Image 1: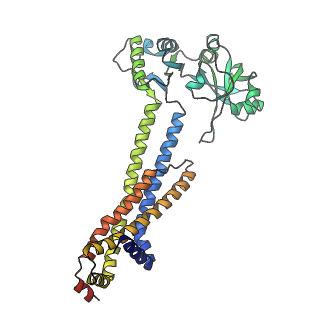
Image 2: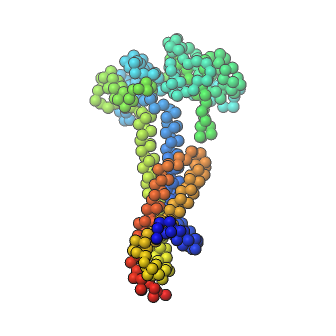
Image 3: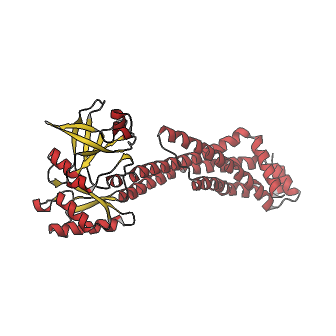
Length: 401
């Protein structure tokens, strides 16, 4: 009996007991669909988080004081440090900006009058990963001359002047306490959607202007540094800590630390990957249960077809013929369960992804693995029933009622 004949017999046996065959596959279907869905959603979530973090700039690191560090006045970060870092590492940097901001109120006819004024320098759009759609960035003279210039979002520009281009060159008035200052709009950046459904407008002004207009304190909690793409952020971070520590006279005291978005992405990706694997492993337990179900049904099938086996052996069927026949039947049942489970898993991952507002990433490796694993289940749990059938004594089998 060749493979094709054995396959036809296996299909005929499955079709003759459709409901029983479906129940046999059910455990595998649930297990495979669960694993495919979990991996797809896990990958989709990981990609979504990585994209959001990448949008913040992977070449940007933040120099800050270490948690719990006790600093003297001379050891604290200042605006003078911003200038010295820019001069010391000018060939490796895109820009350096102090992480300072202030809150203000827009004296304009808009629904939300709250605005956050954030410190800016030259190349701020690169540092903050902003998409400038109208106007220009800050020039060195804007910083040096404490110009009351501002970059605003496209949403605010459209609320005030109907379009980004129309906003450039106009002024907006922002108050803080008893002070009201007019800022010239020199550029407009593209607003980004937020998952929270609400956000406060952010305007960027020269850090020197921010310090003057809002009486910002001299000491800084952190300094944001954007390095060129070819520079390794980890190595540069170590150099930056050593430089600032040497400048402050506290080398080796670990009073400063680096926050790198690239390191955060790697850490989060690693954690999410581990969680996905763990949950997938738990879901895969149902595959073992499904495999036991396959073995159970195949043993029942052997018992029901004992006389058939006896007749085949009496007509000359050898051990390997009977073994392959039942093994093929077991693999077909498991393989069909795997294929159906994979299809359901792909559909489920798409549905769940839409509900979670992420793009589920169906891994082709997961699909191949699921299919091969389900077929492997058929072989592993089908060997014993098939071997039992092949070892039956033909005379005893023919006498079986």
